[in-house]
Image (cartoon, rainbow, N blue to C red; front, top):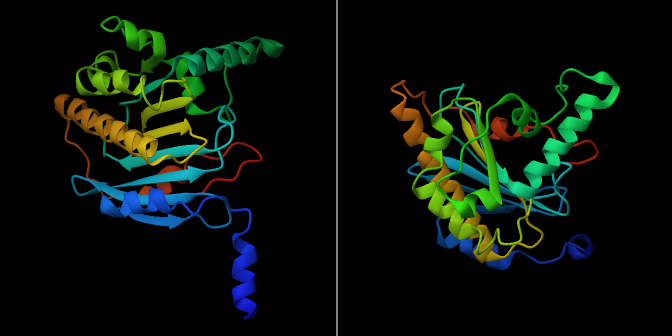
Length: 246
């Protein structure tokens, strides 16, 4: 009886039971579980037999408010293949913050505590989005390699991003899509766990991963294996100060 009361009170204030998103995950053959100690959940799935992880919970970046949706997947990409795409309002905000950091106290470089997505905006050349007025209006990006970034955004990924501007990205929430240390990541602000929006984000991420693999293979380099664990991949991105990740 005591255990029942504890369970009842432990569930108060947790909000929705994620029944819809849990059912969606199970229909897709994914594994769903609540996050420990925080209000959120974790979904593990596969893309062409390779694992990916989706998390929803407290934000790990200061530019995201409320709750954050995160996706990651180990792709075994060449380590120098560093590509970044983000929503344009976020890009303008981070560029402004980077400029202020540079000019404050005559700093000459950004510190290691600065997230990769901010440092890359300073370090790498921008990706041309000249082929799509819609993409230019809604996104911006940079790449460490001159040809791979634009190639990544060609075709399927560009079309998926254009469609997203009319659905779950229509209000231009903070969103980052990037390849880093051989992996692919998507993080975005998502206050509500609407099944349609989560499914759309997962689909966009799957397309981004598929296209990143295509570009990596086109370089003619031997692609490393998928053996690395996905757990360490996400933990390598430290939460923002005062924030706790899941």
